[in-house]
Length: 241
Image (tube, rainbow, N blue to C red; front, side):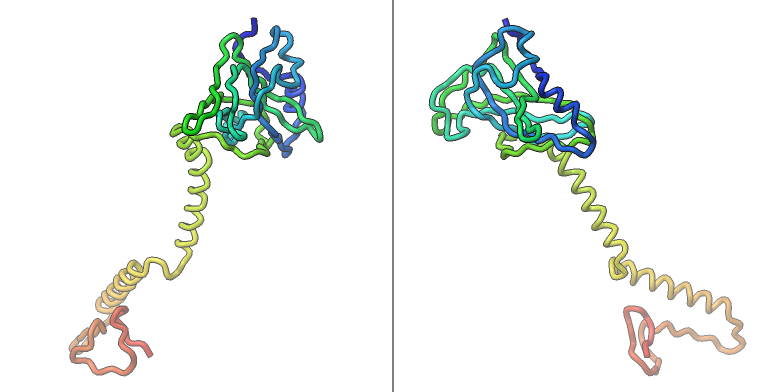
């Protein structure tokens, strides 16, 4: 009797443990099959599925600290469509070790296989299996096949929060910094500040100047009763030469 479980075979464990900082774990393919090991002792020495049936797909790997999470998915519409149904009882994830390919992850449904129906137009049979692999945070994990797995609402939310949101925040901050450094940004605020500065300067002039005659004040907000030379800048309340 083989129990339901997920395992990292010896060859896969050796590859993952031997990766150095800055290296890449290149996941090459995902397979599903109908077999199961005869015993728990056989699991460690597995190099392939017991009875391979078809190539599957997955989501893009998502990093969570030392863990890389992905969802293995098999659909009856993949690879031209499944012509004959089968009992899905195992899946394996393969990665490149130089020029060689090794199975780094094996999942078995034990005595509880799932029937996958043959593909019919409009009727797709889908099986999904979450996977978590522990690797160093300095190791990049990529897949070399298209990530064709359907995304559920939960998948989309997780992808947006862990991948899209950080990128959006970085780009938004860059736009904010660029905007803040632009001397022409917020013209209305600059105009208001210039007006306040002019009024403050006028108050300082009025109360800091010793006047012995008849005082009068010209602000150049308008030119009523005033004859001047130059260009009247009404927005700034000044005469320009």
